[in-house]
Length: 84
Image: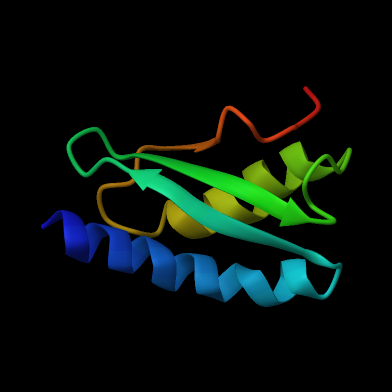
């Protein structure tokens, strides 16, 4: 079940990767816990450390991933530099 959950998340991330790539950035899946529904992602490229990364996380990535059954929360990986 975990594999299917992660694959559905990757499919959802693929839907937003083009938008991020257009601005020189990207996002990767760090972890996905099917039991809790918590998904952790890491920004790369221009998105890493971008002052708008929190808006991207909340407004684009979270919105897309919440369409995946079982996702309850989307967070940035601890080593992702996102301004509050």
